[in-house]
Image (tube, rainbow, N blue to C red; front, side, top):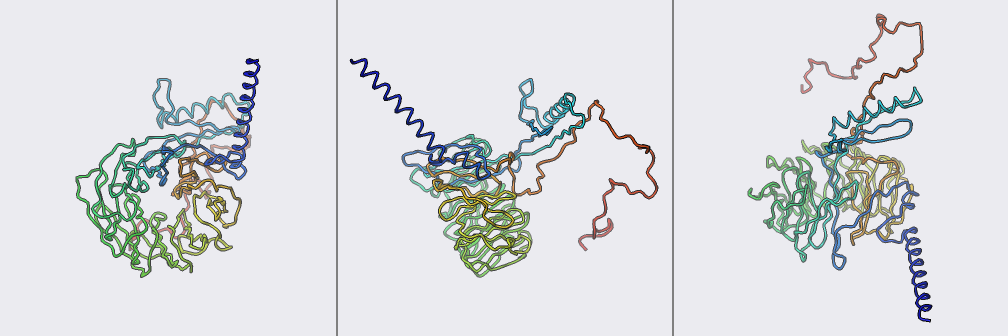
Amino acid sequence: MVCQSLRCCLRFAFSLSVLSCGMLSTLSAFGQVRGILPPNVARQNGLDRVWATQIDVDRTRGRVADVTVQVSSTRKQTIYEITSEGRTSIVSELQLDPNGRPLGVDGAKKYAEDRVKEMKSKSKDPSAEFSIRRRDVPEITLYATTNLGAIHAIDGETGKTKWVTSLGKMDYPTTWAAANDNYVTMLSGSTILVLKAKDGELVWKRRSAGVPLTGPAVTDTHLFLPTVQGNMECHLLESVDETPWNYHATGLSFGPPVGDHDTVAWTTDRGKLVIAQADPRIVRYRIDTGLMFDCSPALAGKDKVVAVTMDGFVYCVDRYNGVIAWKISLGERCHITPFAIGDSVYILTAERNLYCLNLQNGLEKWPGGPAIGIRQLVSSSTEKLYCVGEVGRMLILDNKTGRLVAGVDTSELDLQVVNPLTDRIYLGTHEGTLQCLREIGARWPEVHGDREDSDATPEKAPATTKPRPRKVTDEDPFAPAAKGDADPFEAAPKKGAAKEDDDPFK
């Protein structure tokens, strides 16, 4: 009797476990697992989910404060992509040779060429085409900070954790991380923390001289921090020994500064747009607009700075000569940083209207006017624009027209990473879930500073001893060219090009 009762209990437990597993799988299929977009939902909207990970967060009281994207300008991986008969394979410089050592760039190239020779010799189609394309894929890193003072470095293409460190104080507010190729910095209360980007090792920490107003920005060599006194503190990243100095500007910077290799720019509530550099210590230009700024400017293209005032006036300034290239008024209030990609500048207004302007002249690019109902701009590719709408849905727009293409329910994903650097889409939750989406077929990241796809260089496939059939004609291929025939390999002179003796600076 006891055995029969025990057997019934086991059967019931087994049935319950099977039912629970079925319910979980069903919930997952319908996208009910918080923080993860189901693969089938992503593919219905032209996207692939590349990876999903969990940020190191204390589940009881920890939350993700912010996530920033950093694209390395010096660290990259060279990949040779072999295309043949509709199939693609890759050879990376990081692959190991028979001796267990990385192939390197030259070794990977030779390996790819040898593979092409082998594939050609085995091919049954003598007219089959083989190509080798070199791609230089930059290193992309996500830096996630938490409210408990931790910072988590994640590979942007694989989702693998590089390192995690906790140096900030739990009871102090933590800002976003600002990073370059060598250093990562953040603020814990009024303490500045500078870490090595490679492994998270602490380089130095010190209290700021003034009371910080927002988070920091970095150039290649220095850190910039706005204070409530109206100063912009500047610290040397590699050492704490150098005494920090201040840039003075009229007004307070409610939007954080923005920096790149040699330039830092910020705005103030007194209508000043300041463009400076750290080495040498000079302010290049102070542009007085007479209007209040409530958000950061944006570094656009190779030589432009775009800033928008609270009243909706958009300024485009040359960062090196201080000349205002153009100025327009949108007639709507603005408090969100411009989003500059390629030759386009996206301005989001307080009325949730998204404008697309031409970087060269400030004219609107979308024939139908602004896209409406946009709360946040997240990422962009060559063809699509990814935004967050009023009710938390991710809206996919056509980049050329601003027309709505599709919408994805992302209301459960309350963490949207603003990524103006690449075409990757990073979504998650403040509880620590994070995932990466990309367009179907976009295997390699598109870096927005390089719309022309200069990272993809076609390589000439190596010749083989296997002869190809060729058309027989009566013409002598070795005969000299007829007089007057143009050389097809001679570059035609550009229209309006200056002669060699002309001085272009006259």
